Length: 271
Image 1 (cartoon, rainbow, N blue to C red):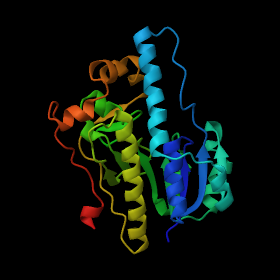
Image 2: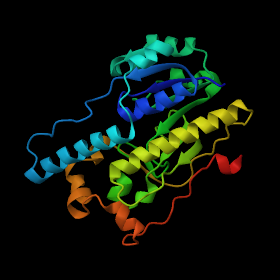
Image 3: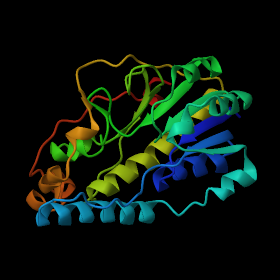
Image 4: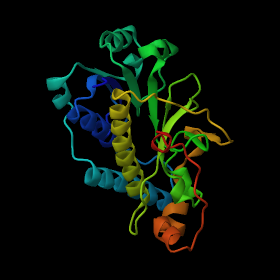
């Protein structure tokens, strides 16, 4: 079986991917970057409405992730595979680079971490990929599973698996995953279902590659936006919660709002 070195964050969705790969005996080793608090404190000087939305938004995120992803203790990885825990300052250190290099994995996959230095890109015969929570090229950068809902395009909330390059979320696309939308889905539910679908797809791709399938990737075509962290603010939540009461999926499925489907890259349709 092809072996993967995974560099991922510490939130439940990140550890879900790690645990699934571990259960399939696909992990050669793992680097976990400790990420920010999962339920942040509202910024000072918010209006009462925006403060309530902020708290509601992150409480619902935690509730949804806890419902979709069982709690995973990082200690389980230490028991089974080489494991390195790092903070942001250590992520691109020589220690981390040498750890990743020493594993001699077939593939490197990153998910939910900060940008890696270029020195990592030459490893594994350049078979290095990123799991991006958003459909590139249309939604690149930060909070890219939020913006499709803000734009009333819930059917564009998906995951892109692409080659790691110097361009942020701009590498050639291996595969894109879309979850099935169902009545009652909240924004966070769709995001979590997208992660589950992408994980299933990723494991299937690795198995196919192990059986000799080439990892054919496609250059990103079309225009999109690189969303920056400053593009999002607590005030943007008014659209989700005050205007639409987080019922955007239901309204889409009823035809009350419309959005053409995205033209995605599907690894399986070509293999």
